[in-house]
Each structure stands twice: as structure tokens, then as C-alpha cells.
Picture (cartoon, rainbow, N blue to C red):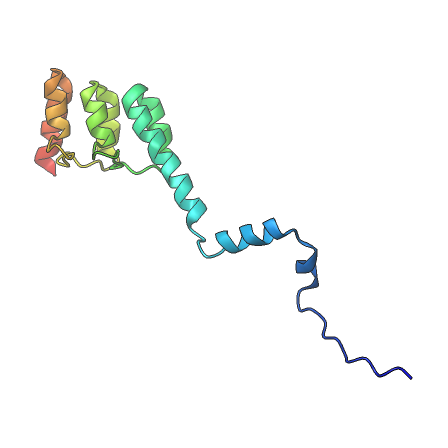
Amino acid sequence: MDSPQPDRKRHPFPWLLKLPIAAICLALLIWPWPGFFRQLRQDKLNNALLEAAHYRTAADVQKALDQGAGANTREPYGETALMLAAFYGQTDSVKLLLSRGAKVNLACEQGETAFKWAAQNKHFDTMALLRKAGEKQ
């Protein structure tokens, strides 16, 4: 005679058994960091702002700011978007960054400010704008 079979408990998540192992591992890796993708998006926006201040027009700077980039975003050595725009004499970009709350007196790792960067390249209009903004801050 056959002995009675013990009752098997049903798995609490049967759909989990059908998923590939890679998907389960990926889910377990990402799940603890809900802000991970949000931070990636913010980094991308900040990089777009720095690139726009470096190479592009005020319209590109405004687009990056409108999408959520921080006005005081820094590059790895501490250069801000305002410093880059001042260095290249992009007066419209400087005005826009100042209107969005960029701080004039921030310094990079070498101790240089946006005003000094504008002065290096003799961008007098930008220097005047930064001096006036610096008096208000």
C-alpha cells in the first residue's frame, strides 16, 4: 500500500518561479535604491546645462534650466555653468543664469570666480553684469 503523501504548501508567489533568474537579480539590485534613476536623470540635465554654457547659446541654457538643471551645477573641478558662460563671454547666458539664482561668488578648486574668468578674456560686458550681481548677493 502507498503511504499518504504529505501536503505540499503552495508557493506564495507562483509567478516568481516563471521569471528568468536575470530578471529577479536585476529587480533585487534596483529595488533598494528608488532614487537611482531620478539621480541619473538629474545628472544628465546638469551635464546638459554645463555643455550648453560651454558650447552653445542662451536658448540651450534656458532649455536645460527649464527641464530642471540646477543653476549652480558644478563640473568635477568646481567650475559652475556661470563660470563657463563668463569665460566664453556669453552675456545672455550669464543674465539667464543669474536670474535663475546662480551664485556669483562661488569659486572653483583653483579659487577663481566667474568674474575672474570673464576678466581673463576681457569680456567687459560680462564683467559689469557680474559685478552688479555680486553687489546684490
